[in-house]
Image 1: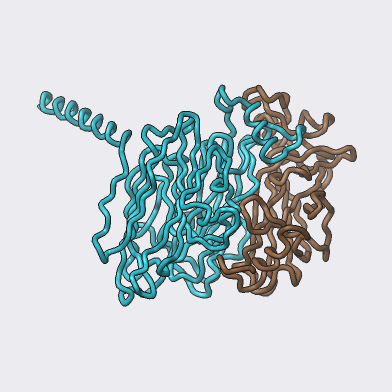
Image 2: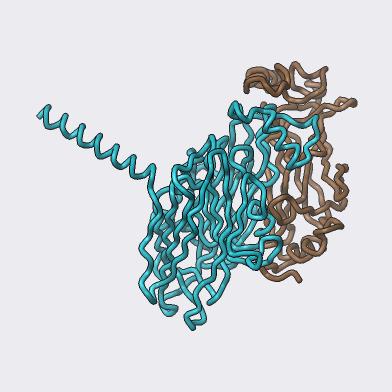
Length: 209
Length: 351
């Protein structure tokens, strides 16, 4: 384990993650990954001798971010191009903060079918020694596309689905959580559209009126 | 022998130059299908001024020849040089992009309803092209698009005449749809469109990869016979894999059936060369990778940040010279796949 973490630090140092500054006029080799000042040198958040920890977060329909645990509701929201996604992020420590792989997927337990989003993210350090995907940046959250529902035999908003979230840093240090969540259609402008395109059997282009 | 070889090289070079000149200024000009053999649509010829990105939406209808359906098994697409993309969709739910507001709806530099992708979010894909060359695709025997008489279609054409792409002539697109008798059709063609939303290629996260999945929703195996990927100039590698619908790690390299490493000339893989069986309840796994780069001097990080701030309301503390999700080539990025398959279960969209 120590060897892997040493490699993580080395890789981050070599890749420039954590080095330099975030001036917008610098070259591509001088970028920094936003971690707090105490960890900026290594790009590692937390204690390298401790096991990684993760707290799953999701964006709410009011624009904030909330901790998600087993049995919790999660909002399905309309992203720029249409459809509905669940925004899934993480708060973690004892893991590299730069260039992590964030993977989130939900699984229909009856069919086994999966919808997945995986992306490269950085964590931002907070005052408590954890790193978090930035709540106001939807690109720092997995955009798990769930609707149009052309994959699950159930209404997305009427049951529970298994949610798995994984963080893997550049050295391969990995932390995962899986539990059940209950997707719901976020209140507001797109509620009716959500209830239409997220129901079982929806066909692309059919009228939602 | 040496002299002959030298003359051949000179001749080849001359011919190459001629070909190069021809393709640089190629003008779309298709011979229309004969009466009873299909239908034709072409856009107007429109100017693409220096520095501009023009995205126009053209509405047209499938001719009503009295039959219940028009089955199309060959499509030809020709575009003047400089096109960034051309997509044709079947018109479904009308939002802010309405043919009643005009058969041609123009948009420029990210402004206008023809740039707002949520307007056509449930409009099934018909065909797409990103090639300067004329693309002619005849589907396998017995496979065809099924159009209703009078069905509305929308052709979206995006031309760029800026830093990343140049348009030497006016923008112009022509499309031929060749029909076959219904009794010759055994399977309808279906399409799948998927995109990674909310992507950002930022200075502090300069080599991101995005991965996604999309099922065909078919209880039986299907044949993938066409594939095309779309990203902008920061894109480095775009892969598509056959996927079983349930696994959660990147599929084995042996299941990769498509790769693009040239954002400006992505391959349009298609039958007969592409004929991939995807298992029942399976789908596509796709990945797109990027490399952040300095913006052109005349745009600068200030310009990129200004776009990010005004279009996406990104807070100041998150401005990081990011190329964000969107259709403007110079300042935005995409990660889109276009897949063609049969037998059709439904047209599929994964957002």
